[in-house]
Image (cartoon, rainbow, N blue to C red):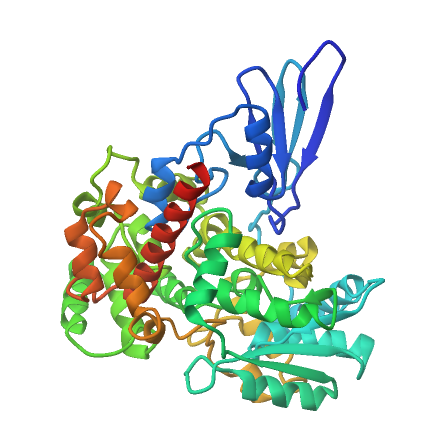
Length: 501
């Protein structure tokens, strides 16, 4: 929209949880451009002579957990915040929140009553989101969240419902066998996609399609299953948001313990435990690997602890030896500012709220971009505002147990779904990333990151990158995630250079 002699006005709004992105920029002479994808904005930017320049702070933050909204990889290009509207006319631009999620005071109802209310809410929401004039299905990973959605959808649609599952045979994250049993128990159709795809081709597809550097490797199976499902249906329901709404990650359990007693343990004790456990073998997903990360994070400041307990990549102290460009603002400052807003929350609610602010937006963009690439509409019932608002007001003990997260969701569907589902450990919708990086993608990684002319060396110290590639540094961290993030960044920068040339 360009201001002129005529009265011009635009009103934009984004959904409450941010399931759909809305990007915009404003030119020096008052023209406003907006689109749901940055690639569309690039076309408008060219027509409006709006220069697109990479924002160094975005790359700096990306090394910790991604690019936080409302900023993007480009200077002057923003993403409207979830639950916000923006009004624009030829003289001014105004943006305000139209929906705010509160977590206090907690509801006063029995645990049994809460389970019944939750089932009713989920049933009502799924029924509403099943409305479609085109063929519809569900994504079924085998985990708790997608199984609940599939269960409720099967009650409404019956045996004609089709569920879609990605299988990674031979890897610990594979849940396809459980998904197959669930589909059989519910009497619905089931399509399984074996992860027999080219890792290298998949990497380039992610870089090509996602508008910004996107380091969540689950974008690969998300694109694969979206492509498969689009051959059968045009709309799919999924279980996205279940972990963030009901406290499903292991870090929520850690925060529950931290609330109860962990915060009373002196920092130096946590630090000592971290050093002792640091020399013990164990993968990141193992119990020992998780315990190492928890003890290390418990000895850190709340902002650093959030980074350690989530992606566990680079914090600001790491970046002092990695970053070679102009000094940037610490990523932890964003987290600290958010923590000030929610200082009266429990540590469980703080973790959930921080995830909603900094982690969930990326997960939602992942599915939106993956599904749109296949001309598929993805719907997430757990992110309906009624469910989110109800869950936010539940006591911590209802959501997060002392051993496992999503307590109320598991108990509400106990007996309706198999114990493999309701009592199973979370595995995640992931690819065998470490195996790929050390095998299928090893040559690509070496060529991209160890090339002396690599574009990331305009931002990062090449010695640190080389040591990381040789697994001589950051071994106690999320090595595979960090390596993948650097690979994606380098490939994205190369693509950007070609587009500019």
